[in-house]
Image (tube, rainbow, N blue to C red):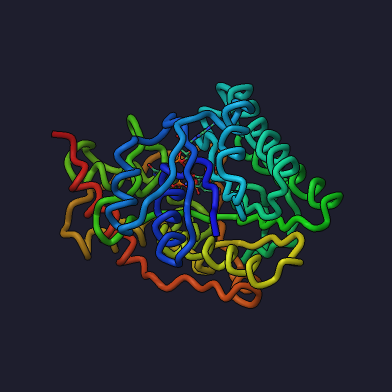
Length: 337
Ligand code: NAD
Ligand code: UFG
Protein backbone atom coordinates (compact mmCIF):
# COMPACT_ATOMS: atom_id res chain seq x y z
CA UNK A 1 0.00 0.00 0.00
CA UNK A 2 1.39 3.32 -1.05
CA UNK A 3 1.40 6.36 1.22
CA UNK A 4 2.13 9.89 0.01
CA UNK A 5 4.04 12.04 2.49
CA UNK A 6 3.98 15.80 1.99
CA UNK A 7 6.90 17.42 3.81
CA UNK A 8 8.34 13.95 4.30
CA UNK A 9 11.96 15.09 4.57
CA UNK A 10 11.22 17.30 7.58
CA UNK A 11 11.73 16.46 11.23
CA UNK A 12 8.53 14.54 11.93
CA UNK A 13 7.95 13.32 8.36
CA UNK A 14 11.37 11.69 8.09
CA UNK A 15 11.01 9.76 11.36
CA UNK A 16 7.49 8.73 10.35
CA UNK A 17 8.70 7.59 6.93
CA UNK A 18 11.13 5.18 8.61
CA UNK A 19 8.43 3.66 10.83
CA UNK A 20 5.84 3.46 8.03
CA UNK A 21 8.36 1.80 5.68
CA UNK A 22 9.32 -0.64 8.44
CA UNK A 23 5.65 -1.61 8.71
CA UNK A 24 5.69 -2.65 5.05
CA UNK A 25 3.99 0.33 3.38
CA UNK A 26 5.45 1.93 0.26
CA UNK A 27 6.28 5.62 0.60
CA UNK A 28 6.39 8.49 -1.88
CA UNK A 29 7.64 11.80 -0.55
CA UNK A 30 7.03 15.28 -1.89
CA UNK A 31 9.02 18.13 -0.37
CA UNK A 32 10.24 21.50 -1.63
CA UNK A 33 13.24 21.46 0.74
CA UNK A 34 12.22 24.83 2.20
CA UNK A 35 13.08 23.48 5.66
CA UNK A 36 14.91 20.22 5.00
CA UNK A 37 17.87 18.75 3.20
CA UNK A 38 17.94 16.26 0.35
CA UNK A 39 20.43 14.06 2.23
CA UNK A 40 17.58 12.99 4.54
CA UNK A 41 16.15 10.95 1.67
CA UNK A 42 19.26 8.75 1.54
CA UNK A 43 19.23 8.43 5.32
CA UNK A 44 15.64 7.14 5.24
CA UNK A 45 16.61 4.61 2.54
CA UNK A 46 19.72 3.57 4.44
CA UNK A 47 17.87 3.08 7.74
CA UNK A 48 15.12 0.99 6.17
CA UNK A 49 16.83 -0.69 3.25
CA UNK A 50 13.79 0.32 1.19
CA UNK A 51 13.39 2.43 -1.90
CA UNK A 52 11.41 5.65 -1.58
CA UNK A 53 9.81 7.72 -4.34
CA UNK A 54 10.68 11.41 -4.21
CA UNK A 55 9.49 14.58 -5.96
CA UNK A 56 11.07 17.93 -5.19
CA UNK A 57 7.95 20.01 -5.66
CA UNK A 58 5.89 22.61 -3.86
CA UNK A 59 2.53 21.22 -2.76
CA UNK A 60 1.09 24.66 -3.57
CA UNK A 61 1.97 24.00 -7.23
CA UNK A 62 -1.17 22.20 -8.30
CA UNK A 63 0.13 21.04 -11.70
CA UNK A 64 3.25 19.56 -10.16
CA UNK A 65 1.16 17.82 -7.50
CA UNK A 66 -1.21 16.47 -10.14
CA UNK A 67 1.72 14.85 -11.91
CA UNK A 68 2.54 12.98 -8.69
CA UNK A 69 -1.01 11.61 -8.51
CA UNK A 70 -0.97 10.73 -12.23
CA UNK A 71 2.28 8.83 -11.85
CA UNK A 72 1.11 7.15 -8.62
CA UNK A 73 -2.56 6.24 -9.21
CA UNK A 74 -2.34 3.74 -6.35
CA UNK A 75 -1.86 6.22 -3.48
CA UNK A 76 -3.84 4.69 -0.62
CA UNK A 77 -3.35 7.50 1.90
CA UNK A 78 -1.77 10.91 2.30
CA UNK A 79 0.04 12.11 5.41
CA UNK A 80 0.14 15.88 5.19
CA UNK A 81 3.12 17.26 7.12
CA UNK A 82 4.12 20.06 4.72
CA UNK A 83 3.79 23.51 6.15
CA UNK A 84 5.56 26.32 7.92
CA UNK A 85 5.64 26.03 11.70
CA UNK A 86 7.33 28.97 13.43
CA UNK A 87 4.89 30.95 15.55
CA UNK A 88 6.93 34.19 15.65
CA UNK A 89 7.57 34.17 11.90
CA UNK A 90 3.86 33.62 11.29
CA UNK A 91 3.10 36.84 13.19
CA UNK A 92 5.57 38.74 11.00
CA UNK A 93 4.61 37.03 7.72
CA UNK A 94 0.95 36.03 8.06
CA UNK A 95 0.23 35.79 4.34
CA UNK A 96 3.19 33.52 3.78
CA UNK A 97 1.75 31.18 6.43
CA UNK A 98 -1.84 31.33 5.24
CA UNK A 99 -0.77 30.75 1.62
CA UNK A 100 1.57 27.86 2.25
CA UNK A 101 -0.37 26.07 4.97
CA UNK A 102 -3.82 26.48 3.41
CA UNK A 103 -3.23 26.25 -0.36
CA UNK A 104 -1.23 23.06 0.11
CA UNK A 105 -4.26 21.45 1.78
CA UNK A 106 -6.73 22.72 -0.84
CA UNK A 107 -4.55 21.30 -3.62
CA UNK A 108 -4.17 17.97 -1.89
CA UNK A 109 -7.89 17.58 -1.29
CA UNK A 110 -8.64 18.48 -4.93
CA UNK A 111 -6.19 15.79 -6.07
CA UNK A 112 -7.55 13.23 -3.63
CA UNK A 113 -11.05 13.97 -4.92
CA UNK A 114 -9.96 13.68 -8.56
CA UNK A 115 -7.79 10.58 -8.16
CA UNK A 116 -10.06 8.81 -5.72
CA UNK A 117 -7.75 8.73 -2.71
CA UNK A 118 -9.81 8.10 0.42
CA UNK A 119 -7.52 8.59 3.40
CA UNK A 120 -5.73 11.59 4.84
CA UNK A 121 -3.84 12.07 8.09
CA UNK A 122 -3.15 15.68 9.02
CA UNK A 123 -0.43 17.19 11.25
CA UNK A 124 -2.36 19.36 13.65
CA UNK A 125 -1.13 20.76 16.94
CA UNK A 126 -1.95 21.24 20.58
CA UNK A 127 -1.87 24.92 19.72
CA UNK A 128 -5.48 24.63 18.47
CA UNK A 129 -6.78 24.29 22.04
CA UNK A 130 -8.15 27.35 23.80
CA UNK A 131 -6.38 28.20 27.03
CA UNK A 132 -7.73 25.90 29.70
CA UNK A 133 -7.60 25.78 33.47
CA UNK A 134 -8.35 22.09 33.22
CA UNK A 135 -5.63 19.60 32.33
CA UNK A 136 -5.13 17.18 30.66
CA UNK A 137 -6.57 18.49 27.40
CA UNK A 138 -9.18 16.22 25.83
CA UNK A 139 -10.03 16.23 22.15
CA UNK A 140 -13.48 17.69 22.84
CA UNK A 141 -12.18 20.76 24.70
CA UNK A 142 -12.85 24.24 23.21
CA UNK A 143 -10.59 25.40 20.41
CA UNK A 144 -9.03 28.81 19.74
CA UNK A 145 -5.79 29.91 18.17
CA UNK A 146 -3.80 32.97 19.15
CA UNK A 147 -1.44 33.48 16.20
CA UNK A 148 -1.47 33.01 12.40
CA UNK A 149 0.37 29.66 12.58
CA UNK A 150 -2.16 28.32 15.07
CA UNK A 151 -5.00 29.63 12.95
CA UNK A 152 -3.69 27.76 9.89
CA UNK A 153 -3.86 24.55 11.94
CA UNK A 154 -7.37 25.33 13.15
CA UNK A 155 -8.61 26.40 9.69
CA UNK A 156 -7.09 23.26 8.17
CA UNK A 157 -8.96 21.17 10.71
CA UNK A 158 -12.22 22.90 9.68
CA UNK A 159 -11.47 22.46 5.97
CA UNK A 160 -10.78 18.75 6.44
CA UNK A 161 -13.88 18.26 8.60
CA UNK A 162 -16.06 20.04 6.01
CA UNK A 163 -14.52 17.95 3.21
CA UNK A 164 -15.17 14.71 5.08
CA UNK A 165 -18.72 15.82 5.78
CA UNK A 166 -19.57 15.66 2.07
CA UNK A 167 -17.13 12.89 1.14
CA UNK A 168 -18.46 10.37 3.61
CA UNK A 169 -16.35 7.57 2.17
CA UNK A 170 -13.17 9.51 2.99
CA UNK A 171 -11.31 8.93 6.24
CA UNK A 172 -9.80 12.01 7.86
CA UNK A 173 -7.60 11.66 10.93
CA UNK A 174 -6.46 14.85 12.64
CA UNK A 175 -3.46 14.25 14.87
CA UNK A 176 -2.81 16.96 17.45
CA UNK A 177 0.86 16.75 18.31
CA UNK A 178 2.09 18.04 21.66
CA UNK A 179 5.82 18.87 21.93
CA UNK A 180 7.88 16.51 19.79
CA UNK A 181 11.56 16.26 20.75
CA UNK A 182 14.23 13.55 20.50
CA UNK A 183 15.79 11.88 17.51
CA UNK A 184 16.19 8.51 15.82
CA UNK A 185 18.33 6.02 17.77
CA UNK A 186 20.83 5.87 14.92
CA UNK A 187 21.73 9.53 15.53
CA UNK A 188 21.25 10.07 11.80
CA UNK A 189 17.83 11.74 11.79
CA UNK A 190 16.78 14.61 14.03
CA UNK A 191 15.83 18.24 14.25
CA UNK A 192 18.30 20.80 13.02
CA UNK A 193 16.68 24.24 12.80
CA UNK A 194 18.42 27.07 10.98
CA UNK A 195 19.71 29.95 13.08
CA UNK A 196 19.06 30.39 16.78
CA UNK A 197 16.36 27.92 17.84
CA UNK A 198 13.09 29.15 19.34
CA UNK A 199 12.13 25.85 20.91
CA UNK A 200 13.49 24.47 24.13
CA UNK A 201 15.22 21.20 23.20
CA UNK A 202 17.00 22.49 20.07
CA UNK A 203 18.24 25.45 22.13
CA UNK A 204 19.47 23.18 24.95
CA UNK A 205 21.32 21.02 22.41
CA UNK A 206 23.13 24.01 20.96
CA UNK A 207 24.20 25.05 24.46
CA UNK A 208 25.40 21.50 25.12
CA UNK A 209 27.68 21.48 22.07
CA UNK A 210 29.00 24.96 22.85
CA UNK A 211 27.31 26.84 20.02
CA UNK A 212 25.31 28.92 22.49
CA UNK A 213 26.45 30.04 25.92
CA UNK A 214 23.50 29.27 28.18
CA UNK A 215 19.77 28.62 28.20
CA UNK A 216 17.41 31.42 29.15
CA UNK A 217 14.58 29.89 31.14
CA UNK A 218 11.58 32.02 30.26
CA UNK A 219 10.00 32.71 33.64
CA UNK A 220 10.02 30.91 36.99
CA UNK A 221 6.80 32.37 38.36
CA UNK A 222 4.30 30.18 36.52
CA UNK A 223 1.67 28.27 38.47
CA UNK A 224 3.60 25.01 38.24
CA UNK A 225 5.54 22.80 40.64
CA UNK A 226 8.84 24.69 40.19
CA UNK A 227 7.55 27.88 38.54
CA UNK A 228 8.77 27.02 35.03
CA UNK A 229 6.50 26.17 32.11
CA UNK A 230 5.14 22.63 31.85
CA UNK A 231 4.61 20.86 28.50
CA UNK A 232 3.91 17.37 27.19
CA UNK A 233 7.16 16.36 25.46
CA UNK A 234 6.82 13.32 23.22
CA UNK A 235 9.65 11.41 21.58
CA UNK A 236 9.48 11.89 17.81
CA UNK A 237 9.76 8.11 17.26
CA UNK A 238 6.70 7.58 19.48
CA UNK A 239 4.95 10.31 17.52
CA UNK A 240 5.89 8.51 14.30
CA UNK A 241 4.33 5.35 15.70
CA UNK A 242 1.10 7.30 16.23
CA UNK A 243 0.94 7.78 12.45
CA UNK A 244 1.50 4.06 11.88
CA UNK A 245 -1.39 3.32 14.25
CA UNK A 246 -3.61 5.85 12.45
CA UNK A 247 -2.76 4.27 9.08
CA UNK A 248 -3.44 0.79 10.42
CA UNK A 249 -6.85 1.97 11.61
CA UNK A 250 -7.96 3.10 8.15
CA UNK A 251 -6.60 -0.11 6.63
CA UNK A 252 -8.54 -2.17 9.17
CA UNK A 253 -11.66 0.01 9.19
CA UNK A 254 -12.34 1.59 5.78
CA UNK A 255 -15.36 3.33 7.30
CA UNK A 256 -13.42 5.16 9.99
CA UNK A 257 -14.76 8.58 8.93
CA UNK A 258 -13.52 11.56 10.93
CA UNK A 259 -11.27 11.01 13.95
CA UNK A 260 -9.29 13.44 16.09
CA UNK A 261 -6.51 12.25 18.40
CA UNK A 262 -4.04 13.91 20.72
CA UNK A 263 -0.53 12.53 20.36
CA UNK A 264 1.20 13.17 23.65
CA UNK A 265 2.41 11.17 26.62
CA UNK A 266 -0.16 12.52 29.07
CA UNK A 267 2.66 13.67 31.37
CA UNK A 268 3.83 17.23 31.82
CA UNK A 269 7.48 18.14 32.46
CA UNK A 270 8.80 21.55 33.46
CA UNK A 271 11.67 23.40 31.78
CA UNK A 272 13.85 22.58 34.78
CA UNK A 273 12.89 18.88 34.57
CA UNK A 274 14.19 18.91 31.00
CA UNK A 275 17.43 20.71 31.86
CA UNK A 276 18.10 18.48 34.86
CA UNK A 277 17.40 15.24 33.00
CA UNK A 278 19.49 16.43 30.05
CA UNK A 279 22.42 17.17 32.35
CA UNK A 280 22.00 13.84 34.18
CA UNK A 281 22.13 11.70 31.06
CA UNK A 282 24.60 13.68 28.97
CA UNK A 283 26.95 15.18 31.55
CA UNK A 284 26.69 18.58 33.14
CA UNK A 285 26.62 20.52 29.89
CA UNK A 286 23.81 23.04 30.12
CA UNK A 287 23.96 26.19 32.22
CA UNK A 288 20.85 28.29 32.55
CA UNK A 289 19.69 31.66 33.76
CA UNK A 290 16.20 32.68 34.71
CA UNK A 291 14.93 35.27 32.23
CA UNK A 292 11.67 37.16 31.66
CA UNK A 293 8.56 35.30 30.56
CA UNK A 294 8.17 34.88 26.79
CA UNK A 295 5.00 36.67 25.60
CA UNK A 296 2.18 34.27 24.81
CA UNK A 297 3.49 31.37 26.92
CA UNK A 298 1.13 29.57 29.27
CA UNK A 299 1.67 27.80 32.60
CA UNK A 300 1.08 24.28 31.46
CA UNK A 301 -0.20 22.19 28.60
CA UNK A 302 -0.45 18.40 28.47
CA UNK A 303 -2.56 15.87 26.70
CA UNK A 304 -5.10 13.33 27.66
CA UNK A 305 -3.76 10.41 25.65
CA UNK A 306 -6.72 8.17 26.52
CA UNK A 307 -8.63 8.34 23.26
CA UNK A 308 -5.64 7.48 21.06
CA UNK A 309 -4.83 4.58 23.37
CA UNK A 310 -8.39 3.24 23.35
CA UNK A 311 -9.13 3.66 19.65
CA UNK A 312 -5.80 3.14 17.87
CA UNK A 313 -3.72 1.44 20.55
CA UNK A 314 -1.23 4.28 20.72
CA UNK A 315 0.93 4.64 23.79
CA UNK A 316 4.20 6.54 24.04
CA UNK A 317 6.90 4.28 25.48
CA UNK A 318 10.07 6.36 25.49
CA UNK A 319 11.24 8.22 28.59
CA UNK A 320 12.41 11.78 29.07
CA UNK A 321 15.94 10.39 29.44
CA UNK A 322 15.57 8.74 25.99
CA UNK A 323 14.44 12.05 24.54
CA UNK A 324 17.37 13.98 26.05
CA UNK A 325 19.96 11.36 25.11
CA UNK A 326 18.88 11.00 21.48
CA UNK A 327 18.49 14.76 20.94
CA UNK A 328 22.07 15.29 22.10
CA UNK A 329 23.45 12.36 20.05
CA UNK A 330 21.97 13.86 16.90
CA UNK A 331 23.21 17.34 17.75
CA UNK A 332 26.75 16.03 18.25
CA UNK A 333 26.66 14.39 14.82
CA UNK A 334 25.51 17.69 13.32
CA UNK A 335 27.82 19.98 15.23
CA UNK A 336 28.96 22.84 12.99
CA UNK A 337 32.50 22.11 11.88
P1 NAD B 1 9.60 20.60 9.33
O1 NAD B 1 9.71 22.02 8.92
O2 NAD B 1 10.81 19.90 9.81
O3 NAD B 1 8.96 19.75 8.13
C1 NAD B 1 8.07 20.29 7.20
C2 NAD B 1 8.55 19.88 5.82
O4 NAD B 1 7.63 20.39 4.84
C3 NAD B 1 9.92 20.44 5.45
O5 NAD B 1 10.72 19.40 4.95
C4 NAD B 1 9.64 21.48 4.38
O6 NAD B 1 10.69 21.57 3.44
C5 NAD B 1 8.36 20.94 3.77
N1 NAD B 1 7.46 21.94 3.16
C6 NAD B 1 6.97 23.07 3.72
N2 NAD B 1 6.13 23.68 2.85
C7 NAD B 1 6.08 22.91 1.74
C8 NAD B 1 5.38 22.99 0.51
N3 NAD B 1 4.57 24.01 0.22
N4 NAD B 1 5.57 22.01 -0.42
C9 NAD B 1 6.41 20.97 -0.15
N5 NAD B 1 7.09 20.83 1.00
C10 NAD B 1 6.91 21.80 1.93
O7 NAD B 1 8.43 20.53 10.43
P2 NAD B 1 8.02 19.33 11.40
O8 NAD B 1 8.44 19.68 12.77
O9 NAD B 1 8.44 18.04 10.80
O10 NAD B 1 6.44 19.49 11.34
C11 NAD B 1 5.65 18.75 10.43
C12 NAD B 1 4.21 19.20 10.58
O11 NAD B 1 3.80 19.01 11.93
C13 NAD B 1 3.98 20.67 10.27
O12 NAD B 1 2.74 20.80 9.61
C14 NAD B 1 3.90 21.31 11.63
O13 NAD B 1 3.12 22.48 11.63
C15 NAD B 1 3.25 20.22 12.45
N6 NAD B 1 3.55 20.29 13.88
C16 NAD B 1 4.84 20.37 14.29
C17 NAD B 1 5.12 20.47 15.66
C18 NAD B 1 6.55 20.58 16.14
O14 NAD B 1 6.75 20.99 17.29
N7 NAD B 1 7.54 20.18 15.36
C19 NAD B 1 4.09 20.52 16.59
C20 NAD B 1 2.77 20.44 16.13
C21 NAD B 1 2.51 20.32 14.76
N1 UFG C 1 11.54 27.81 26.86
C1 UFG C 1 12.54 28.40 27.60
N2 UFG C 1 13.65 28.85 26.94
C2 UFG C 1 13.81 28.71 25.59
C3 UFG C 1 12.78 28.10 24.85
C4 UFG C 1 11.65 27.66 25.51
O1 UFG C 1 12.43 28.54 28.81
O2 UFG C 1 14.83 29.15 25.05
C5 UFG C 1 10.34 27.29 27.56
C6 UFG C 1 9.03 27.95 27.14
O3 UFG C 1 8.80 29.13 27.88
C7 UFG C 1 8.03 26.83 27.41
C8 UFG C 1 8.81 25.56 27.15
O4 UFG C 1 10.20 25.93 27.24
O5 UFG C 1 7.64 26.86 28.76
C9 UFG C 1 8.55 24.94 25.79
O6 UFG C 1 8.77 25.92 24.78
P1 UFG C 1 8.86 25.51 23.23
O7 UFG C 1 9.11 26.78 22.46
O8 UFG C 1 9.82 24.40 23.05
O9 UFG C 1 7.42 24.92 22.93
P2 UFG C 1 5.98 25.60 23.04
O10 UFG C 1 5.17 24.71 23.93
O11 UFG C 1 6.05 27.02 23.41
O12 UFG C 1 5.50 25.57 21.52
C10 UFG C 1 5.30 24.35 20.85
C11 UFG C 1 5.57 24.52 19.36
C12 UFG C 1 4.57 25.47 18.76
C13 UFG C 1 3.20 25.04 19.09
C14 UFG C 1 3.03 24.88 20.58
C15 UFG C 1 1.70 24.34 20.98
O13 UFG C 1 6.85 25.05 19.16
O14 UFG C 1 4.72 25.44 17.35
O15 UFG C 1 4.01 23.96 21.05
O16 UFG C 1 1.52 23.12 20.37
F1 UFG C 1 2.31 25.97 18.63
